[in-house]
Structure formats: C-alpha cells, structure tokens
Amino acid sequence: MQTVILAGAAALSIFLVVLGIYLTYFSSRSVVLNRLGRAAAAEGGAPEGEIPKEGLKEDLLWVLGQLGRIVPRRSRLKDIQGSLIKAHIYMRAEEFVGLTLLVGVAFYAAVFLLSDSVLLGIAAGLIGLYIPGMLVDSKKRKLSAQITEQLPEALNIISSGLRAGFSFPQAVSIVVREMEPPLASEFSRTLRENRLGKPMDEALTDMLARVENDDLELLVTALLIQRQVGGNLAEVLDSISHTIRERVRIKGEIRTLTAEGRISAVILSLLPLAVAAMVLLLNPEYMLTLVQEPIGLVMIGGAVFLQIVGIFVIRKIVAIDV
Image (cartoon, rainbow, N blue to C red; front, side, top):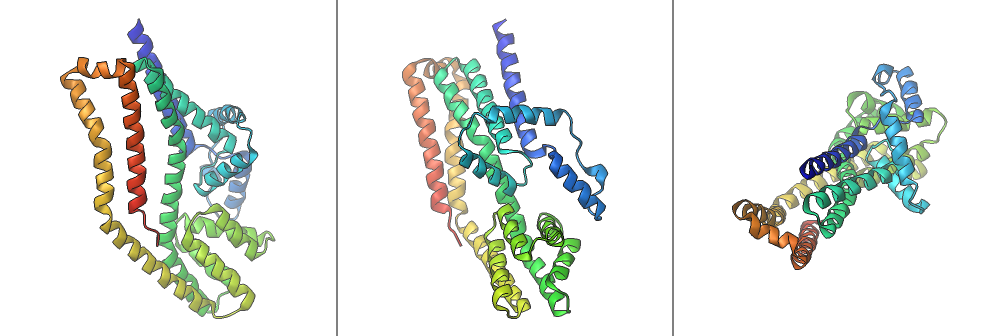
C-alpha cells in the first residue's frame, strides 16, 4: 500500500511539473491579446482561426493567479511581468508566481515521499522554485540571440529602402514582410502602434521594453538621436550593422576560447551525481546510510550547495561581455 501511495504522489508531482512547464511555454493568450490577434488578422496578419481558444487552460491560469496573490510586493510583480513580456510568455505575474509555487511544492513532495527526508525535500523545493525563472531567462536569451542574428540583415534592408527613396516606416514594413519573427513581429507591432497614433519615438522606446537586447537598444538610441539632430540615416544604419556583425564575430571567438571552462563546469557538476548513482547501484545499503543518517543529510546539503556555488563561479569566470 505504501508503495502505491508513493508512486501516486510521485506521479502527481511529475504531472504538476509538466503542467507548469506547459503553461509557461504554451499558455493561451488573454482576452485582450485575443482581441489584438483578431485585429491583426483583419489587417492581413495571422488568420483568426490560428488564435488559441480559451478553455481549461484559462481556468488553470486563473487558479495560478489566485495562488500568486500571496506575494505582497507590487514592484516585484511588475519586474516579473516585464520579464515575462521580454520572454514572449503570455501570463500575468500572479499566474507565474502561482506556477512557481506549484513547481516548488511538487519537487518538495516528490523528494520527501521518496526519501522521507524533510531537509532533502526543502532543498528540492528550493530548486523547483528556481526552475520556472530559469526557463524564462533561457527563453529571453534565446529570443535575444535570434534578434541579434536577424538585425544586420534587417538594417541592410532598411538602409537599401532609404536609399531607394522610401520613408523609414515604409522601409521597416519591408522587413516585416520579408523576415521572420521575432524581429519581424516586433517591428510589425511598432508600425501598428505608430499607425494608431503613437509617435514613432514612443513606439520604438516601447519596443525596447518588450525586448532585452543590447544591439536593438543601440539601434533605437541611434534612431532617436537621428530624428532629433538629423543626418544620413542610411549610413548610420550601415555603421550599426557593421558594429553588430563584428560584435557577433568576437562573441563567437570568445565562446570558442572559453569552451573548455564551460565543459569543465558541466563535467564537474555531473561527476558527483554519476558516482552517487554508481554506488547506489553497486551497494544500495552503503548509499542509503548516507541518506538515513542526519550527518549524511548535512553532508549532502553541503555538497549540493558547494556544487551550485562552483557552477556559478565558473560561469562568472567564462562570461565575458563584449
């Protein structure tokens, strides 16, 4: 009977984790975003039939939002909402906090029921609380890398359009038609806001609030300065495009030179887990003694803490800003 209970609890925990990840990456849009999607479809954007329908996921998101209301600090919720927007994750901050709590509880329950150790359960719960934020940061970095890769080509298109006699919005519209998301979708939203009456300067500034990318910030800053003082915008864009290409090249060289350090971090992180798994398979009683004794749990906690510190130290050493 106890085995059945443990298996059921573990299955429930895994379900909660999978549900949390699913809601993070594939949650349906809110009512406002659905309306914007229908407006975009009317302007020739994505077909209305492709807009996600509301249903069970919306109810689950509402439950997560209620859980997230236990966080009292509005400023923190605002920061979380900004991160979600930059990661293109269509959730409210309260929903994300509720999701984070669910993942933490799921990790705690799974480890506690399998090991019967409160300390290990708490450690696993803390790791679970960190995972959703880590996924958001990962998605932000992925989007930023995609935008950096697309920017030089987009700037060349805009520059060529300006030399051909197009206005800046017309040249940007060529980028929207010819290129793929995420850069095309961001420029499309900027143009749509401008058509609806928002000044181009404000629309460009709002785009920076939705995207975390240093190269795009450089572009927007140059555009704002050029709109104030004038000058040859095509030459400015060519110069920015060259700068971005050189920065990407230098980052690639640095990544190659620091590959050994990053691989060392991965190997050193996985080695203790591999040794523990091997000992557990060869001599389970020997390994279980470490888990069942209080001093053993303290040693495991200390080892995990030092491993995490070591990973962050190595990542800090090999992280070189360009």
